[in-house]
Length: 328
Ligand code: UDP
Figure 1 (cartoon, rainbow, N blue to C red):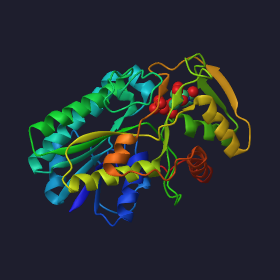
Figure 2: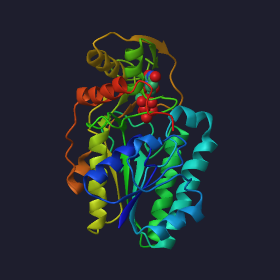
Figure 3: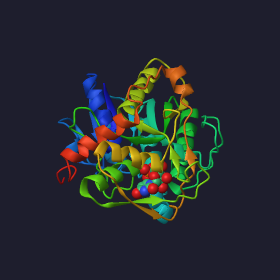
Figure 4: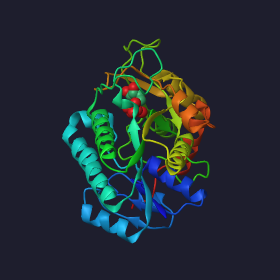
């Protein structure tokens, strides 16, 4: 029996593949390499294809005994999704629909799904709970909410059970140093700030007039290693017969953009050249998780809940791999 990891060559997917292999699991990876990197994957079954290619996907289910699917494959940039929303609905929503059709036809009944805090939208001061209203402020979040709903409807009408994990802001890198973050173009705050420090380049700060203590956006940054460990707990819960459910994945404490930039300066031991810029479209002021539900239901225990640990692991990756992965 093998676990099919869709989007396994991406930042989070590749970390989960590494984690699964360390647990002795058999893994099959599908990725269209639109944003992922072949070089992030160790040896093993790999198929370069789009999930919308149902015939090829069905062939993989025939060839391998797929016990469960972990679905990371999606475009995930807030800014881009505001400029090109239809690209997001086509790639994220339509492909998920196709994946579900193939899974159900093949009798595969377990799915772990990468969702996002962006499904919540403007959330206010309190920690966000899974039962809070979902009102996305950007097309990326809307596409993920649609995917969650499609999965839920599919599960209601079949044997499929799923766990949707709503990630807050994922950063950091694997301790082994083999893999890390390599988005092209990079748009996320922590990698951009680290690269700015390493290359002595300016970093833009998008908006300092938000209703937060220092005027900059607050996010809940989670280490990728804690995040992938939660996926494995979710997989084992489904194996043990757990019902479908949705969980937040964050630490329950927020840092402002300014605090992140200060923390990067401390790790890099040099000042950043911060350039104030207008707000980025679609950014909510504050997104901080309540992680109580996943801790209670799945026994998730964060082990890297330390901003310095997150930034240092990412810093080491970027320092050792200034050009990211070799070209695929
Ligand atoms: N941000 C910033 N400068 C950058 C990139 C991001 O000020 O060069 C801000 C962004 O506006 C948001 C926060 O950093 O408030 C986190 O953004 P990121 O893209 O890392 O994650 P998101 O919250 O969009 O998933």
